Image (cartoon, rainbow, N blue to C red):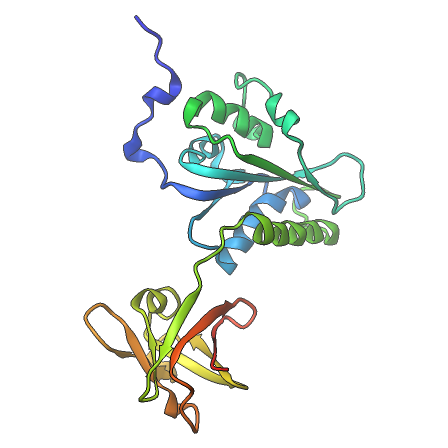
Length: 267
């Protein structure tokens, strides 16, 4: 009987959705700075990531993290490290170290680290395992049970977030809206579904632009985005906000994470 390789037993029916980038945070959420990886994933989830990015909490998923790598074009694994260097230091593991990983045999979920995840992933996925893998490690200070992240670990986490957004996240397609000649702001259905599922916004003027803030329901006040068609495109009468009509045409918009609002510039 011919030996069957592990990846040949995997069913595509249960495979995770393909993605451009998988970010996996490893660590124990209950052990101080060792929670850095899972805390990073929670932070990114709360702030939002571009389309094509999938987030995995490797601290609680155990060996399932290897299966989660299937279908990812690129993988970034983030974990804590304790080497004796100054806490908060950010390392990028050299490629040659990724080539020499521990054997997949004898692994246990209670001692599952980033190198174990990669070793197990290569064994499980075979040719389906991504080859574009980056490992980022943050030097931490204290992994005592029950402690919160130290200031040094938090600084390292911020450095990882900045690096991911600058170097690894796929560039999102520029969103835009349309100002019509009769003074309406037209928003596409996908944009409304992503940011304003209730169909209600708060509009805040800011110089030659506005911030559109999501509101839970019309009972909380705000402006109702009027439905334009069956597809779900919406419109907002700008005269309710401005004392003049902005110049018609397409306008680029950006999501402002700090304000939790969609910024629309008319200049």
